[in-house]
Structures are given as structure tokens and as C-alpha cells.
Image 1 (cartoon, rainbow, N blue to C red):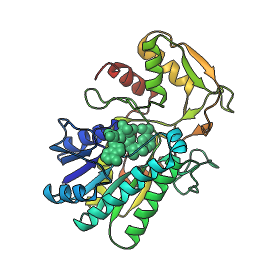
Image 2 (tube, helix red, strand yellow; image 1 turned 120 degrees about the vertical axis):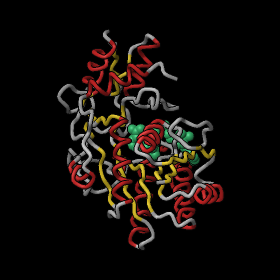
Image 3 (cartoon, protein in one colour; image 1 turned 90 degrees about the horizontal axis):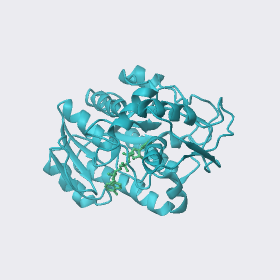
Image 4 (cartoon, helix red, strand yellow; image 1 turned 60 degrees about the vertical axis):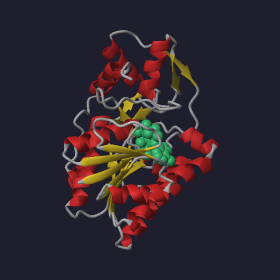
Length: 317
Ligand SMILES: NC(=O)c1ccc[n+]([C@@H]2O[C@H](COP(=O)([O-])OP(=O)(O)OC[C@H]3O[C@@H](n4cnc5c(N)ncnc54)[C@H](O)[C@@H]3O)[C@@H](O)[C@H]2O)c1
């Protein structure tokens, strides 16, 4: 298929473009960032808020489906500057959906997030858990899920919203985790090691086995594969769905640090600091629905695979 991948220059988008092209799809990337990876037949440099440019790109490249990853992703930044998040994530999403409607493109895989759930009353969290996000970032993801639900009900589009948990690890030569600013654990721990300073652990007094926060880490290669399966499901006429992309396993910050020490072969000094506002003690997803609907299983559920790939790729540009 001809697939438009927005956010194709980013961490997860690069991995998605790679997996889709390996599966035989023709990928047109779309990102603010110029350049073109080997996985992209071309990259259109543009903003997802640019309706006219999107409409042209969809028509010019015969696009049949869209994987929409572009967006702003830092929770704390979304609290400080909500308008920027609504603008990029929701105005951008609406511009894209409207351009798709105009070009008669009726299939979308959307990057949603575990942030749509908010405070968890059940862990591992199932998809039917109430969606009450507690920050603007999560609200913009939920707003997009609502629009997709409405379009589906109107018979205008079929979609799979993938609710990511913690994307982690690297695909060598393809996707390395690097955000600006970086708020994620593994790249920050590796950066602290490089700088020769202790890695700051946000909170060591949570109600968890070792006091540090527990998360569900999904290898970026597995996450990318979920998009390929979601696309195949839609292309085969499958119904719309919102699915966790989760292993159902949780690892604490202390366990991730210990795993990084094994990968690096030396200690990673840490320094406990206060909890970060809005961080829940445990965030783990139920992964049964995606297994049943898409046949997706995490290929790298072992944390050591995730940290070893990140450690090995840390110097790759
Ligand atoms: N990284 C995670 O753990 C995680 C977890 C849950 C959800 N997500 C979602 O996954 C998606 C990708 O995340 P990532 O970690 O690869 O982030 P990233 O920052 O590496 O990639 C995002 C890409 O989107 C592009 N972009 C941003 N605004 C744009 C705009 N207005 N127009 C065009 N391009 C734009 C950026 O240039 C960047 O290349 C995001 O939608 C994010 O919300 C990520």
C-alpha cells in the first residue's frame, strides 16, 4: 500500500517507516524535519496543520492509508503551554483528517497514549478503563480518539488507535530514542553516564516493591510491528479499535538501572530526588486485546533486550 507516515523523522516514526517498508509498503514520510531515511520513498517536509500541503501530498502520492505519529509529546510542557499541544496535536489532527476526507483516504493508524487513562483504578489497565486524562497532553490524545470514533460512526473512516505505554530501546541504524527535551528514563540514564553525573531517580518512596515507579516498557521494534499489523487489519476490512500496546509486565526504575548496568558492564550511579508531579506509581497495560485482534505479542519482553539495544545504539547519530 501507499502509506503516509506523519512524524517519520521521530523516534517511533523512523521505526514504523522501516517496518512498513520492509513489509513491502511504499512509505511517504511527512515531518517538520527535512531529510529522508532509507525506509521512505520520499519525505514531504511540512506541518500537519498545513491542510493544503497535506491534501496535495495525499493526492500526488496516491496515499491509501495514514499512520499518524506527528505531535508534541512532553507532558510537563503540555501543562505549561496547553495551547501549543492543542494546536499541533488536535488542530494538526483535524487538518489531516479533513485532507484525508477530501482525498478519499479512509484508513488511519493513530498514535494514542496510555495518558488517556489518567488515574488508574485497575493495573494492568484494560482498554475499557475510564478515560480521564490528567494533563493537556493526554487530553489532546483523547480528543483525537473522540474525533476518530465520530468519523467511524459516520462511516467516513476506519482506524486503529494504538495506546502506547513506554516505548524504549533502539533499532540499530534506524531508530534511537532522542527527544528535545528528553524526559524518558533510559536515554536520560545513558546521558548521565556519558556526562559522568549521577542519574536522578524521581521518587524512591512509592508504594512499589523497591519504592521506585513501575512502567511497561515496549521495545520500539515491537511497537512498530503493531502498526504494521494494525494497517493489515484495516486493509483487510477490519473494524475500528483502540488497543493498548503493552507487555503486561512492569519494571521499576531501579530494575531498569540494574539492567542498564548489565548492558554497560559498569555501575550507573543514581541519586534519588523528589517525585515528578503527575507520575503514577505503576503504569502497566493489559495486552490481551491486541493479541486477540492483531495477533501481536511483544517479541522482546525481556528488559535486558531493551536496555542492551539502547546502550549499543547510544552513540549512533
Ligand atoms: N515515546 C513514547 O514513549 C510515547 C508514548 C506514548 C505515545 N507516544 C506518541 O508517539 C508519537 C511519536 O512519538 P516519538 O517518541 O517518536 O516522538 P518524536 O518527538 O521523536 O517524534 C515526533 C515527530 O513529529 C514531528 N512533528 C511534531 N509536530 C509536528 C507537526 N506539527 N507537523 C509535522 N510533524 C510534526 C517531529 O518533528 C518529530 O519528528 C507521538 O504522537 C507521541 O505522542 C510516544
